[in-house]
Amino acid sequence: MRRPHVVLSLVFLFGFVLAAQAPAAELDGPAHDFTLKSRGGENHKLSEHIGDVVMINFWASWCGPCRQEMPLLDDLYRRYQSLGFTLLGVNVEEDSAQAERILKEIPVSFPILFDAEHKVSKLYDVIAMPSTVLVDRDGNLRYLHKGYLPGYEVEYEKQVKALLLE
Image (cartoon, rainbow, N blue to C red; front, side):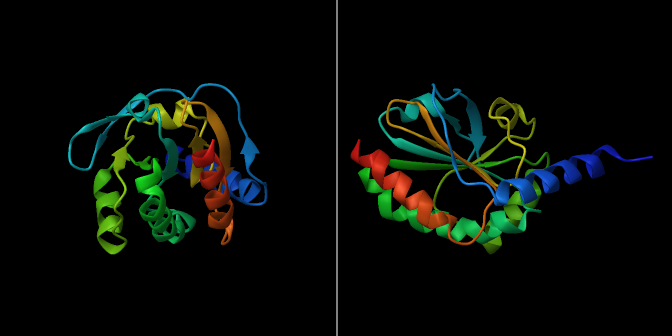
């Protein structure tokens, strides 16, 4: 008999293997609004960031590629934050203690939000870890990246710069 968490892990792994080979998808339409609690206990609402280019990065502590890209995302955030770029790291685990442990090893300056009930990850149809969504200044979905391989951060930066210039 298969256990639900094993099946879920296999789904994420299969999605990651397929997604890591796929280029970023261009999206269209309004981003789904959401409100999630941050590490500090404050609520963060996506719609409060209208006017900024927003990257939403869905991640988990058990995801090696997530841990690999976090310092690169933090560097991107630090470089472009003053120009109207926001990065929201959305941890999808039910137990935030695992995320906190990883964040001690890999500290980041961007806000970390917790989606323990998977409401936001379901809203965005997250099937691969990590998954990264870019939202333009008007609150519209623009790009989706599933998975992470070294070099994806170059594409992230190109897309962020282009959206900042719009």
